[in-house]
Every structure is written in structure tokens, then in C-alpha cells.
Image 1 (spheres, rainbow, N blue to C red):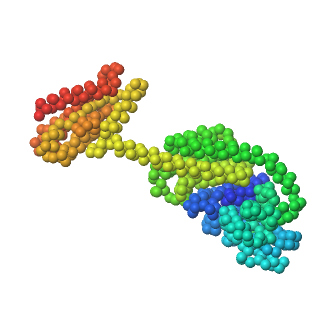
Image 2: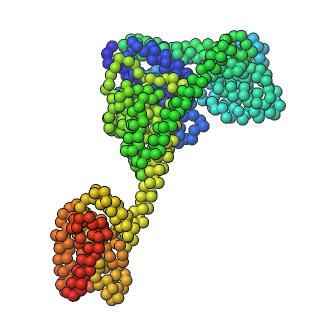
Image 3: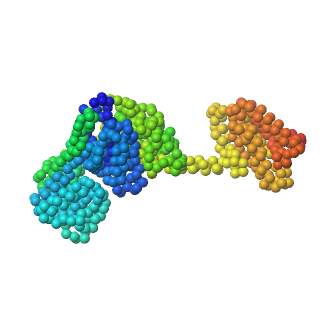
Length: 636
């Protein structure tokens, strides 16, 4: 077997949190011999999300270029959407790498399945034989979900074998959502309809929901039997504890690790493996002494304060992240703020990455409509990269590389969890957290994703508003006739320049005052439209003379230029060239009156007198302009 560490892509839904956590823990703990890193791509899409949200969340599955991977695992329980699963299957088929499918048989894929049927059949047989159940309501998942349908088939077969009536009217499809179950069964219970002997639910959460609806309507918790599926911790802590079926996902993870080990060695393996479920009776089915539920609840209750503290610490960390994003002045400021925040140790771990599409700048400046929807860009900018507690500076990397330090190697098998960053339908990056399967169980990946994406919406809107305000400010400071800066812009510029002069920070400059000659004659003889054209021609001459300096129209026929940089160095030569050009126009008999531009001017240097403020420099330039105007009038 090649000694190079293998890369395995894993695709799953984060809402199936406890099962996926158990699976990944079993996978990692039994992968030592395989020497493999697992890149886990997590979507939190569920039926209650909008179509845009679902598509944006599920683009995380499009992120990896599978040509760089050695194998993949498709964890179908909880993926929910047939079209998403089918798209993943196509992607995996095209990759040509070995694929292990958990829970779904597909030609060409290795299959590790859970025998849902046996556990569910044990549950149903137990209810009928031990508790004399005859009237059953089944709260199913979704119609197209294979796991839910397998459980339904086991129930149907058990009912038929025992002569218990069961048909379509006994089934309620929940789509795995709590809200429709709450509404439906509160309505049934309040109507006074006869309770079923048993409510068999497709998972533990649905079982808890039915129990709440029943007690909220005045029934005692033991008025009917309620069972679940998955054997989740929450269901074990519940009162009454939920009778449920353990799918043994830790063993599924262990079997998958063993399968990968043999695949990487090129050894022949079974293409299908099945792990049997185990039914655990509980208080909710009337088996009060079947488990040490009370001891278990006491143990869990003891840990509640610590659990709440951890939740609070994690929430505070991601609140800080959210705050830094929202308060950022621009994209570079956001990068700096996040780098500073995650420089310090935090609960996110010592290895942590935030990668973002550099085009997010376009999103915030209103150029979002030109960006492709529902796909990742070819390049990602490293916003934060922390490996083993040390910050890494990596800049922009190819998206296919995934991690800025992808070439870093060590002897430890890692789990890298990828969650998407998106702004509406525009997917713009991902966050990577490492070796924290427990965070999957506690929803912390989802908290991080939600906080970041919510903050990104606020950030982009802030940037759009800032850009709009800047544009409006520019329009307010622009002269509508000549399109140079107006008196408002001039006053703001002078105020800033005065402040710089007072602090000794101003660069050398010269003030050139201009006043148009002959404007009244043009207006009187040719009309005001011609007068406007004459003003624009004069302004153009001033702007072409001082090309690299701000020019302001401060009155009807008055302009000011502040010569800086190269224009300042050549201030006298430029002014002489302008005057020579006007003299040539004045003496050309073929020029029309409107083309014979005549502008009086006066220049004052900031360095002429030590201690001058701007107003003194301007008055000197203005005085010289009027002296020049007298000379020009005499010449005319």
C-alpha cells in the first residue's frame, strides 16, 4: 500500500447530527492503519428552508474536486432531497474513485447498510405481543425516503402477521418536520378523537413531539404508547424515555474504516455489508424497568450546567465573529478584524480556516448580478488560516486545493469539516473546523455557519449603503455644468488642507485663481446657451493645464486649481503655456468669439511666506488674478 496519507471525501447532512457524529467517531477511531484524512462536507438543508437556501447550502457538495481524492463516502441518511442525492451520485460516478454508500444501494458503489427492518420489526412485534397493541398510527418521514419506507414495511409486515389492521389511513407523512406533526396531532387530540393504542414514529424527535402534543391537550404521558427510532441521547433523557431502535452508527463507521483499509490495499472485499439494528424498550412503551433511565437522566441533569456554559462560550465566540464582520469598514478591514479575533485561542480549535471568494468585494459594491449563482469561484482568498495554533499567511489559492496548507503532513488522521459561506444565491466561500465531531452533535457547525452568513448579509448591505452614499456625495460635490468639483467640495478640501497644514503634514501646493473674461459679452451677443458653452471651454483649458490636480468651480465665472505633485513642480511653466495658448487664440482672426477663450489667473505658492494659512495664500492668488485681469483688459 502507498505510504502517502489518503484523502477521503465524506458527504452528509448536519441535521442527522447524532448519527453522523457516532459514524465519524467510529470511522476515525478505526482508521489508524489506513492513514487517511477525512474531508467532511456538511449541508444543513432541510425541507423548511427556501429553495434558494437549500441550493446554496448544498453547493458545499460541489466544492471538492474529487480527482484529488482517493475515495469517498456518501452518507445518505438525512440528505432528504432526491435531486441532491442524484447529483452527488453523478459526481461520484464520474470521479472514478471507490465510493462507499451508507444507507443507499447503487451499482458500482460499495454499500454499508443498516438493517432497519430487523430493529423495527422487533419493535412492532414487541408492541403487539407484549402490550396487546391493535390500533397503530405511524408518523413517517418523507414518502421518497428509503429508511422511512423500510420502517413502514416492517410495521406493515408485523401488523399483517399478527392480524392487526393497518393501512394508508394509519400513516401520516411528516417530511421529518416537527411543525406539521404538532399541528396535526394537537388538532386530533383536541377534537376528542379516540387515541390510538400506539404512535410509532420514524425518529425520536417526532416521538417527543407527539408526546408533547398529547400532554398539552390534557392526556397523561402514559395514555398511549409512543415509540421512536435512532435511540438518540435526547430520547433517552426524555420522560417517559423513548422506546427506540439503535442503528449502531459507531459500528457502521468501524465497518467503513475496515472496508477502506482493504480497498486501499487492493484486496478483495464484500461489496455489501449490513449492520443489524437493536431495539431498546423504554418507559414510553410501558417497559418501566427495561433500562436504567432514571440513573441516566440524573447523570445528564448533573452535566446540564457544564453544557450550558459550553453553549454560552461557543455562542460568545461566534457572536464576536459576527460583530467583527458587521462592523468592518471594507473587505480588507474584515480580514484584519477576523485574523485578530482568531489569533487568540478559542473553542473552534487550533486548526481553523475561513476561505472566501475575493469577488465578495463585488457583492458589497453592487456588482453581484454579474457573478455566477450556486457555484464556487476558481480561486479562494485566505481570510483566516490557523494550523496547530499558528496563523498562516497564504493569500489567494486555487479552490481545488481546499486548504492553504494542503501539503502539510503529520501522522494523525484528521477530520476536516467544511460548511458553506453564501450571500443569498451567491456562494462565496467556506469555513473549515477540524477534529470536532462532537461539534456536529451539538449543532455548533450550524451556529457558526448561520452567524457568519447572517453577518455577511449585514456586511454586504452596509457596503452597498456606503457605496451609494459615496456616489451621492460625489454627485452633490460635482458642478452640473462643467462636471468639475463644486463649491461644497472646495470647502471640504480646504478644511482638510488647513488641518494638514496645522499639523505640518501638508505636501507642497500652489493655489491658482481663475476668472473668466468676456462672459457677459458672449451672453449678450450669442445667448446664455453659448455662454454655458464658453464656460465649459474655459474649464476644459484649466483642467487640461493642471491635469493632475483638483479643479473647482467656486462661482459662476470663478475657478480654483490646487496644483500638487508634478503640477506643483511645473506650476509656473504650466501657467505660462496656458496664457500663451490664450494669446494665440485672441490674435487668430479666424476664431469665433466663443472660441477665443480668455481667463485671468493668479498663482500663489504655499512656501512664499512662513506661517501662512490657506486663506492668506488664497488672498494672494486672488489679488494677482485681478492684477492679471486688468492687464488683459487693457490689451483687449
